Length: 411
Image (cartoon, rainbow, N blue to C red):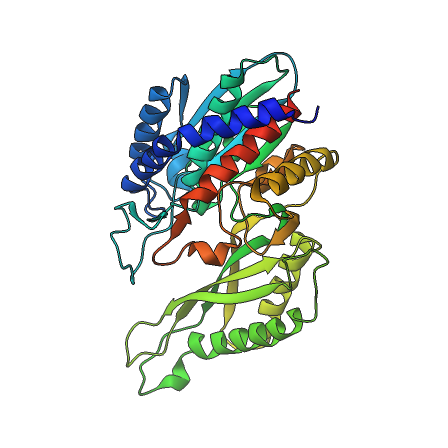
């Protein structure tokens, strides 16, 4: 069912009349820190639940068991679920995450102040992705306000571990059977509809040698010297990745970065151990297991034959790439048409080089896209950087788009 002019106008009027409320809710969400790490996110969930209940929603609180929370490197995590059943029909999940990266340096305003200047709100998480707590909540309210017969259920999935991988957020909700959606919207970053994104492999590499006094280095086995051979092999390999190109618009090539390194005992001691972690980004066309096998062989080969040297490789995380699930084209078509009408300019699809919680839904066979409040591109929002920002008019427009799309899906 294509949205009719009366329903479209009613949704527009509803959102327009509540712009002040929406900005105020977003400000309240930004003002409660939820940095991950360290990942003490239960306080933000409590505040979010209070705000949702003020809107009239019944909020399910799903605290994750402490052992799972700690295993995922966090302190506390409570996922929130809101359900509205309009009738028999498909279940549509709207997922946004409330955990954020730490603010870092270089801010011109208080990162938790929710300062508004010239229609733009600044604050950590204002774009990624506390804004979509508001987008999705008010889209559901707009749908309810129509008072029309619809077929299906809308669920809000507000989770808190995206920055740690999503295993105790969306993945946990799905594995526990708390939700069984047919469609899913995951928090968006731009005007475009995201239909694919990169995967990511994190490995920890430990090079072992034997310590010795610096006056007699010949009596030891230098782990740092061996580690430099591994690093050189990795950087040479990185150069070959530029030759691999993705066919997805918005995604270019795989990448590799060594982001952490530590080791040694003291200045006057031959290093006995060096540990580093690497980040290998995977384009949607790549096989994650094959990429990991290649890296392990490369690392082991770099130290092969070095006396007294051994190497250990441990997988820290594997986030699989996200791509289209069969049957998602209908959702994409409806969303693109409504976004184009509301935005007043063509809105198409793209891929992004990040990884997100959307992959957990698509891996479960759920027809999934990323769409929500955002600027023309993620860089304009300063996502994960100082002075993260959101043009508030983009919040209101995205809410209209989501409400109109839900109306058609449930029509």
